[in-house]
Every structure is written in structure tokens, then in C-alpha cells.
Amino acid sequence: MFEGLSDRLSGILSGLTRRGALTEADVTAAMREVRRALLEADVALEVVRGFTDRVREKAVGAVVLKSVTPGQMVVKVVNDELVAMLGAEAEIIDLNAPAPVAILMVGLQGSGKTTTTAKIARRLSSRDKRRVLLASLDTRRPAAMEQLAVLAAQVEVESLPIVAGQSAVQIAKRAMDAARLGGFDVVMLDTAGRTTLDEALMAEAAEVKAATKPHEVLLVADALTGQDAVNTARAFDERLGVTGIVLTRMDGDSRGGAALSMRAVTGKPIKLVGTGEKVDALEEFHPARVANRILG
Ligand code: GDP
Image (cartoon, rainbow, N blue to C red; front, top):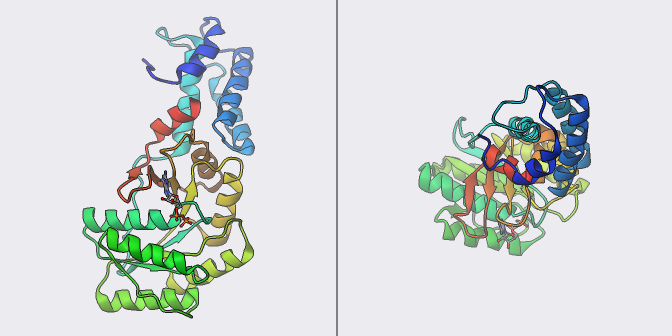
């Protein structure tokens, strides 16, 4: 019935004896293992606490179905809650606004922001038949600007010509003007990243946001981010009003805990996941799959 549903956790909890309904003691013991599984999956501590409290409430008194063991029953309650918390399937990028629709890409340096910008552009262009213009706002790193131009050519969308000496806001405004004149549907603005959260980064992105009124503010975050995931997501969301999250490196060893952490602290949907370095390695987010991965 719950085939494939976290064999490991079911195995650990198989010691729970069969009864009509789960007791408080059963559930307390089970929650220790659930907590361990979540922490191993790199879910942030504060999120683990809230999660286990909610699951405990739901699990106590749950009637154990005939076909499963109490351990499996707990796993089912945990799994259902995880899927519910991870959110809806197939959240799409919202382009429902007058053209050109601006999409602001934000995130820490190295998160995969530039690659993800190109991946999304490719998808919007080839699948959704939108005309997309890409612009890099990373004025301090000429190499990053070049990288976006190269990727744009690779995915066959246009990129804004690079003009030295302009500020991020000036480039963003130039991109919007060029898109208006050129009849583009979408403008994707790849903001500068930093290796750590800093005020200058946020202030610059906020200024760009005010100047371009983006319809989507997408936070690109590395799935391998552990306990820092909550701080990163919270900081970007508080300052920039994130509308969605794109989780990269889901092809790696990550158990996906960052997905739960980020979703829990921001309440914002995970819209897409990156699954490789290639420009076509972008997939829709499937909460049930990620829930399974988190439970291990
Ligand atoms: P940025 O500094 O945030 O713009 O990061 P980049 O886009 O330059 O990406 C940094 C590195 O991560 C590059 O080598 C990318 O190819 C790689 N990368 C980006 N997304 C993914 C992904 O989903 N999976 C894997 N394995 N690598 C990725």
C-alpha cells in the first residue's frame, strides 16, 4: 500500500507493536527517528522542530490500517505532512502580466543562478514560444556577464549587449527599454551574487526591483545548502519578496532537506529544480519524490 515509502524509516519503526490506534508513547519514540532522518537530510533544525510537533499531533490517535504496521502508519503520516508542506506540484513561472514581463533572478554566488537563468530562458523560448531577453547585472564580474552571453547564444535567446561602466540599475532599465522596443515577451535579469549574504548585494537587488517591477523574483538556491538554507531564504525573501524558489544540484547527493527548510520559512513555492550542468537539466518540482528522498 505504501510501497517504496521510506523503507529505512519503516524498518526502524517496525518495532512498534500493533494496536488499534497510535499512542502517545509510540509516537514519541517514532518522532526521535523522524527527527534524526530529517536532520540527516539537512533540514534546518528550527524547521525540524515545527515539523515533528505538527506530525506528533496528527499521528497520536491515528487508527492503524489493517494492511500496515504502526511504524508504517507513522511513516505515512510523516510522508503526507511532508508532501503537504513541500507544496503544490507543477508550480509554473507566472508570465501573466503585460509584456515585457521582468523576472529577477537572485541568489548567492555559485548557487547556479546564471546557469538556471539560461535554463529557464531556454524553456520559455523553446517550449512556451516566448521571446526572451537576458541581461547580466553583475557589474563587478565581467566574466559573469560573458558567461550569460555565451549561455544565451547556446540556448538561442538574445542577450543585452554589454556596455562597460553602467550600474546594475542602468543595465536593468536598458534591458526593459530594449525589450519594449524589440517586442520581447520576457526579460530575465541575472543579479550579481556574493558568496555571503551582504547588505550591498541586497540593496542593489532591491533598487533593481524598484526600477523594473518584476513579476517574478526567483531565488536560486543550492540543494546542498544545509543549515544555512533558512537564513539565505529568509534574508532574500524579507528584503526582496521572493515569489518562487529554484533548487539546483538536485542531481547530486543532496537529500533535499533545503527544499523543506526554504519552503517552510518563506512559504514560497519551489517552482523548478536543476538536475545537472547542461542547459536542458531543469525539471518540475515533485513534492512526493522529494519527500521520499528526505525520509531516505
Ligand atoms: P552562479 O554563480 O550562481 O551564477 O552559478 P553558475 O550558474 O555559474 O553555476 C556554478 C556551477 O554550478 C557551474 O559549474 C554550473 O554548471 C553548476 N550548476 C548549476 N546548476 C547545476 C545543477 O542543477 N546541477 C549541477 N550538477 N551543477 C549545476
